[in-house]
Every structure is written in C-alpha cells, then in structure tokens.
Length: 202
Image 1 (cartoon, rainbow, N blue to C red):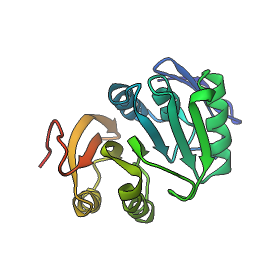
Image 2: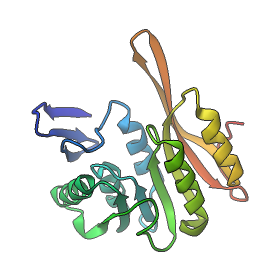
Image 3: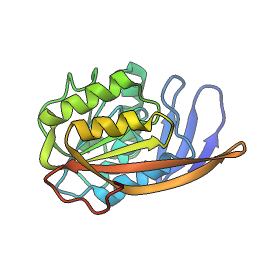
Image 4: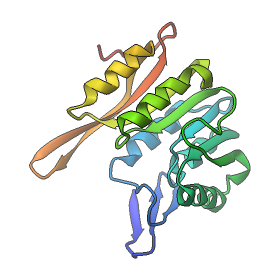
C-alpha cells in the first residue's frame, strides 16, 4: 500500500494495483488493510455473488470486482457511498458493482457467496446486527471474510460466531508494531457449521 497524497482534502492510495481515493470522513486505508484485501483476492471467484458490508472507500468491493461480475457494496455514510461509486468508476469496474446506502442489511436483497466485513472498529451493535442478518443473506455454502484486531474483547466476537453456528478458520494473519507492542490482526474465514473449513483455530 502506497500513500500518494497527504493533502488535507483527501488521501490517495495504490493497493494491489487499484487506485483508491479516500475523502475526509470515510474510513481510512491502514497499513493492515492489505490483509483483508489479499484474502478477498484469494477467496472470490468469478461465479461468486459478493457483498462488501460497510464498504467505506470501496477498496474491497473494487478488488472483488476484479474476480466477480456481481458485487454489492453497502455503507450507511453518504460520503462513503459516493467514494465507493467514484472508486469503482476510477478502477473501471463500475458495471460490476452496485453501491447502496444501507443501515446494516436494510437495503440488501438476496443471498451472497462471499460477505466481506472489516470489523476492526465495529462496535457490539454493528456486529450483533451483522451476525443476525447472515441467516437471510449468506448462501448455503457461503463464506464470510472478517478482519479484526486480536484485541481484549475478541471473546465477544468469538461468542457471536459460536452463537450463530459458524465455523471459523484463519484466512490470513499478521502482527504489526505499535509503540512497544506487537498487535496481531487476523482475517477469519467463516462458514456454516456443517460446511468444511480449512484450518480451525479452536
């Protein structure tokens, strides 16, 4: 990930060969954003219907659209919706992405083979609503890619995963240095409990 502009009005990033403009007020791309981005490229296939939940600047939707012709990206923040649409056009995948303003799953219809969420800064309300909507929107053999910091309250997230009868494995993980601490980040791959998953973390 390379930051090309530090201007106050917006930030421009090049990540995995896509060019993403992040305006003020939209979730920034960080030095661990490539972890989820790489998992998206590894997981999504040309036959998958993909949902990017809380799309922000649309970076993961744009990456998914390099593989899949059917991507839906949702966000509650109007500025994020506008940014995601602009970035889809900028990267020439606008015809593959439908960007919607949505409070959770409110504007989402149908089921998806892959659902992407960057849950790193998601609060309990957002996560509860997200997991509550999976029954209606995750395809029978669908996969969830969930990115998070391995923080102190991770037990609450793992409880939600178990509560909703999902199997978890690790798609990818990495630690970064923050001050004097090493902070681990992970992308979980979640499937329905009766579906296979490659590597259990239990």
